[in-house]
Image 1 (cartoon, helix red, strand yellow):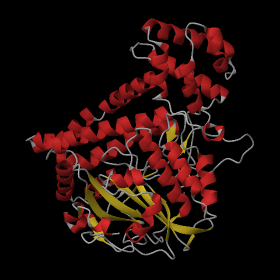
Image 2 (cartoon, rainbow, N blue to C red):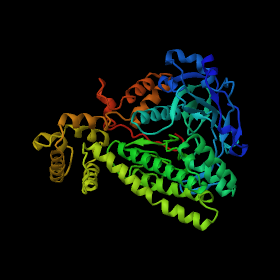
Image 3 (spheres, helix red, strand yellow):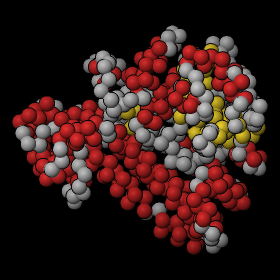
Image 4 (cartoon, rainbow, N blue to C red):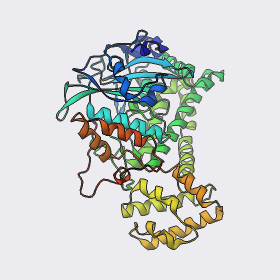
Length: 497
């Protein structure tokens, strides 16, 4: 247990003025016990232990014992939720314990989620339930293995405490990690309160600790514009990666948007099974604001809110500041499109840029939607496409309703592959390193949750192991790479998940 006290533990965010946070104390869960421990994430903190020996760390993982240099705080922020501005939000059920600097010089903030009420709980209990902690634990680690920027998950603590949601559920805590948990909403609150000095303090903090190369820009206004541009670029790349794996976030409110371009706050997310451009993973999203095909535009909308919040940093003259922001924001679409097309070309095994690439991709996706074809499995199977003998591709053709349309597309695709002249084995290997075989489908995590509610946590560990190698051909039952069984009940996920 002393291993936690031996960590290089600080809290740089707590060195900011107290306008940015409130001091808090974790509220213990009743009869807490360890549900899951991530030894891979633990190694980022220079902790070498596996799940078998992790139980001795439980007092720290559950908030019962706070590390000697820790200063637990709840962060203050606001945000636009489903398009409407909420003037004060903040960590209503989370507490940042501090940050660990590992031997490589990397800083990781440790945050307890589900640790009780804070000044920002807005009348709620400040708790998380076992169901939601399992979903975030597994998905954040699955996204990391896919190479998508994300927060990480260190552990889940379970308990006998009753928490009231739609039903009575068991309370739990997640201990998650990120270089920073600052959000777009962290800027918005000070802009709307007209506290512009705090905007500068926050921007300077981020540049000092996370965007250090920007310190080389001497002129302050240009430095803050460069900060926004870096955030914009990271956000465009992140959402592009979501689109490439069929992932829908579900609640892209500005308070859920990371200033570092990380996937943050896993609630009602979903990986698509059959392709549907308008896929809505959040049962509470009645108008489809955060549908799959809306994510790129919502990213732009959210960045516009961030730019608005940062205007006082761009120039003293509001008109000039707005002109600078308006000149920069349109670049988002260019950045997103270039990154997305590069990624989709790679998923198709193409390396040469052509003018008709976008149409080739769109045509395939339209046919997939028309035929309700599984997104993940279709792209994985394309590595076996034979461009020289189209008759050998019936395993693909037979999935499509409009065979003639598919065959026309296949001829164009085959021509592209033949023209590039790449070795088929090399192409297959590269495509299988980009198109995952395993993603965290909702029915898989739901099965793990049902078992965990009966105190059987083995499926959590098994899914974590499978999803840690999403591109590998593993010796597993086909169930783990298949869509939901025919006739099975659809998993419905809402904002309480």
